[in-house]
Amino acid sequence: MGQSQLPKSSGIIAGIPHLARHSRTPEGEAIPQYLAQSNLRFEQWILDTCLRPYDQDWLNYQQEIALRHTDLKKNQSDGVRSTLFVPFHDIIAFVAVINETVKPYLAAKGNTKDEVEGMHRAWCKSLQMQIALWSRPYLETAKASDGW
Image 1 (cartoon, helix red, strand yellow):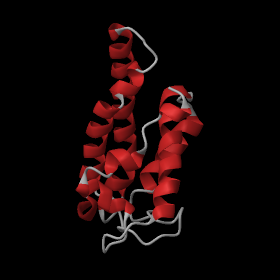
Image 2 (cartoon, one colour; image 1 turned 45 degrees about the vertical axis):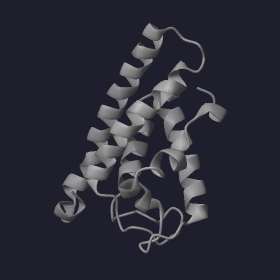
Image 3 (cartoon, helix red, strand yellow; image 1 turned 90 degrees about the vertical axis):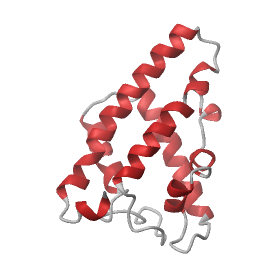
Image 4 (cartoon, one colour; image 1 turned 90 degrees about the horizontal axis):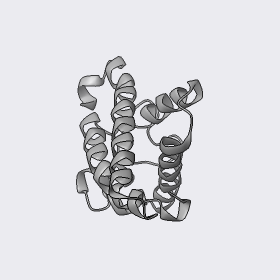
């Protein structure tokens, strides 16, 4: 999957209002620079999911991804005022959406149906592992009940 073929998070998330609100101000106004930076991180996350070795550096970055969705670090990378955190149920919902959205991109290079199914199974397994890793800060914080 080349960089030009990667799905844009804005196109995926924009159609799902309860997810799209996390890239906007609390009043619902667009934050173009935040969306642009989020798209770049999203594209890198896709590439990392597919290509990066799952080593300690990868594990450390999974922790950072998770923290950036909690009230501990949300909005800090881009210095914006958006929702205070992304509830964990929205992250789980996003995984379901991206698992289905990615399939046409996996098929774009002309792989056989069996190859695409194999890549899709590997992708889904990776996201199941990532969602387990992302759950950690939600479970560890005193405010976890507010984030669910």
